[in-house]
Each structure stands twice: as C-alpha cells, then as structure tokens.
Length: 185
Image 1 (cartoon, one colour):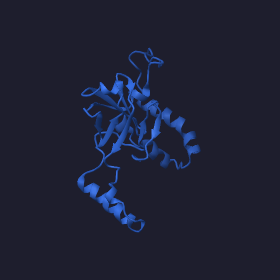
Image 2 (cartoon, helix red, strand yellow):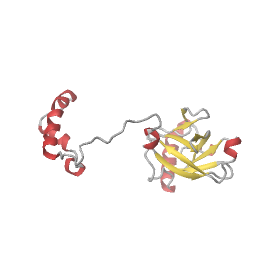
Image 3 (cartoon, helix red, strand yellow):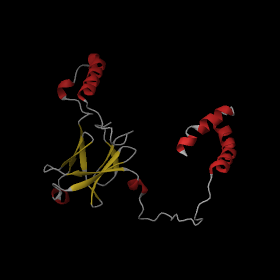
Image 4 (cartoon, rainbow, N blue to C red):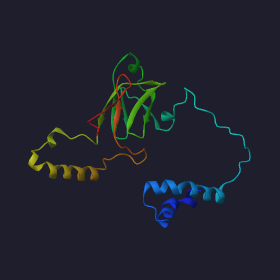
C-alpha cells in the first residue's frame, strides 16, 4: 500500500484546505474510514497472534543497526571511520581476535558488547579530529575550516553510506551510561 498511498494524506489535506494540526486531527478519522472501506481486507485467520512484550524483550537493541567487528591485538575496533579503544582489563584483554557486536542506535549512541556484556571504550574519530598543526589564529579560522572541509571531501573522509545516519554521536562509559563525547560532535 505504500506505493498506492505515497504522500496521499498530504494531498488530501491540501485539497480540503486544511493547514492546522487541529483541523487535520478532525479530518483524520473520517479519512481513515474511507481508506479502510476502500483497501481493507479481512484476515484469513481472525485470531490475534500478537504477544505482549516481556521483560526479556529489548526493542531498542532489536531495532538498532548491529555489526560484528574483530578486536585487534591492541584492543581496538574500527567502525565507520571511528577507532574505538577498549579499556584494558581482565575481561577485555581476553577479547583479542574475537568478534564483538557494535550496536549503533538511531540517536547516534554506540555500544560495544561481547556475549551481552557492555565493554568500556573511548573513541577516536578520524573524521572529526583536527591535527595540532592545523590550529591557526581566530582571524583566519573560518577560511581554514572551509578549506579543511573541502580537503576532507576530496580525500573521501566521510561516514560510510552503508550504516545508519546520525543525529548526535554518544558513547557508553564504564558503568554503561550514555554520555556525549564532545570530540565526536
């Protein structure tokens, strides 16, 4: 039905001269009845087979982008042009050359887990970092930043198009709490 009804509601609202949310909310129930009369089909089996969510169901993890990555000998992971440095410890030292899962949430939060255990890390963003030699006086800063942006485009330094888009990059710290990393923003 997506191809059939693509952008249809917006067009119907325009045809009816509706331009406010309140008028749209009044119009919507009648519009849904018309669409249901036109397109609805009775199910072959009327039994509702949906089950309620349990405490074990985690929709946030199930609906995020997940990718398997191999931990290097130096306890690093490469994901979307960002190097994640796992903090050394008894548990993480044994993860060399093992597969971990990177959870990339829609809000930009990144979590790295092995067998369900969140791993503490710090991030080094290859795209978001400026070299020490690139620091200049404030008078020339705007021009230098524009130049750096163009150079990054030429070199192809950008996020991969394969992964999800990000609104705000965050990271997980030792206690598993989300914290914004200013180096990535």
